[in-house]
Image 1 (cartoon, helix red, strand yellow):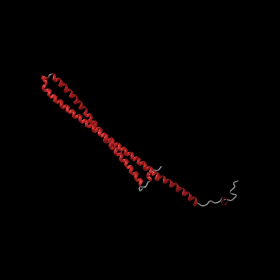
Image 2 (cartoon, rainbow, N blue to C red):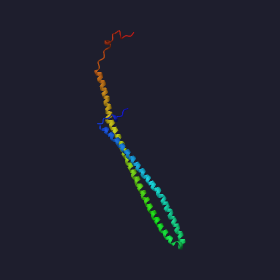
Image 3 (cartoon, helix red, strand yellow):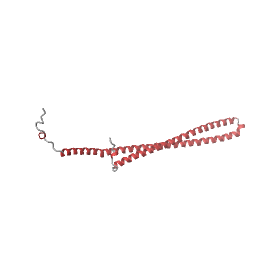
Image 4 (cartoon, helix red, strand yellow):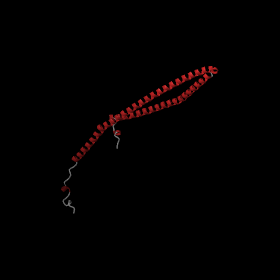
Length: 190
């Protein structure tokens, strides 16, 4: 089986359409791979940030609980620890503010990750749509080439073969009659 695309002339516009479609498939594949690497890098970065932020939140939460416990004990021994309870209350406020800041940063990171995931999903969907459209165009081009070039060429080749056979029959010398070619004795075997 011979490849029809390799038999096409470079002057034929259909040949250049096939070359263009092949180049577009290559560029689409490169773009999809680049997007996959970018999404992978973003996911790794977010994962690292989450792993780093969780221990900090746990520490801040545990420290905040410890400060509250110490403040409760400080009320029981108010005469001895009045000055210390003031400092602990200030530290508790700072821890709460720090916790609120960290939570806000984590919330913003989650929003950024969500936006990135939506954007990446949208880009992948657009690339899928583009690939589907290119495949449909490639199929339509192949069908067009088959119906407009291959089938007519096949029919023309069959017609030319018939014409050639007809011309061979018309141009060939007429056969000799049997009684002129052979003698009457030669016709009987016996």
